[in-house]
Length: 209
Length: 209
Image (cartoon, rainbow over all chains, first blue to last red; front, side):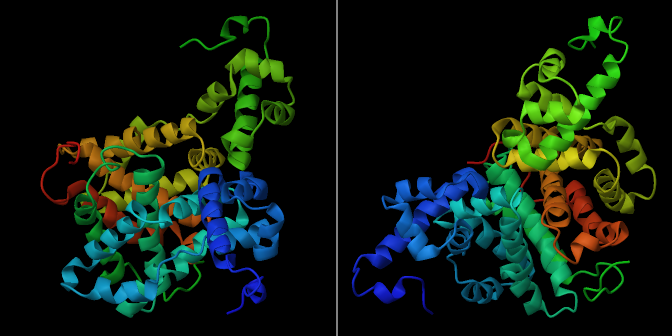
């Protein structure tokens, strides 16, 4: 895959580092301020580069946002590991994986950024919709092989999204400081039910009347 | 209860109308723009009053926000009606009540406003936390009489909050255009489980280690 500026890598040995530094600064800044208020200037300042260099590598602020918000997790590798283990605890394992994304590593400011921005910005709302409807949750629902996988994926996504808002954004106690195990025990069976249970008349993702 | 400016009602026969008009304009403006970007000037313009009058009636922008975002629904009257009917469908009835809040009436821009603002503004985040942890969901959980009512209320709140984001904010299909009955059938049992089920070792809302 080619990236803007990729052809110049020979002339700029630090190019890959610079791109990563810009992406990191973008994630933090979008995470703190949301898409709309974050400026290219602030991101450039945090990354220690000239704003023109960001334009050179990534183009517009929207393009930078899309690049920065690509979740740096290989979801195709996750699903088999979630399926490994007792079937009855599949939901709990998926909840633990989801909490792990937030509790550690670089994904958290990014996920907070997407959540924040999605409330006011159509680009970010589209990205959140994609995460919910096409991300790992859909992969999980498809692995179960049901005709209404998308409806089920969105139900799961809605529960996890709401959980993230309560635990990480508004930090309501006792959920904010409950252990991942406690959350997984409480929420896991909800995920299993959305995967497996009869949810009413079969809908096969038909549009509702 | 006294309200600022209430003592002048005799001299200003349209006062109550004006307050309501300001509150309506505030709900719409906060809903569209979020707390931070909404200006007193824009709210005054929409209400057709002088900004000074808003200060006179409501004080600061934060005080206006709090007044505007008071959900105009008598929740104490709602809980008995949710309990009336077969116990097994309690969750479905609560989901239908929740969707009804969004699908009709004046609460929707207000709820969207709280959601949007809560992502970036501490005042709105506190308000959302209060809605989730002290609102009708807690009343429901308390009516079930469990020691960990608050934990259960937040689990229910997290599911409903996420459902609202998926259905109303990012409008992901098929959930966005599913009928209230379809949603209630799918999500209702989740609410019932959070009210009734064994959620792991008893926690009595103790802080987690």
